[in-house]
Length: 89
Image (tube, rainbow, N blue to C red; front, side):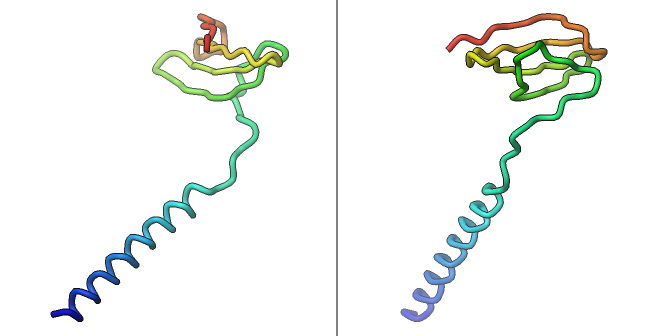
């Protein structure tokens, strides 16, 4: 009985370490430095895209300018501006 408990404990520890190692390997992939926008979207000068999302009839682009100010640009699917929301810290 003592051997069985020891073997099962060792198996459980090895399994847990394997799962943790797989998570670390999976999530330590390369971080992309730039974000590609759809071709029809142009951003204002000096702003870089941080995130892009698309709804049914709109596209949202989170941008940062050279001063570190973040904005959300809501655009129509053809790239025409619909709304700009400033993000305040």
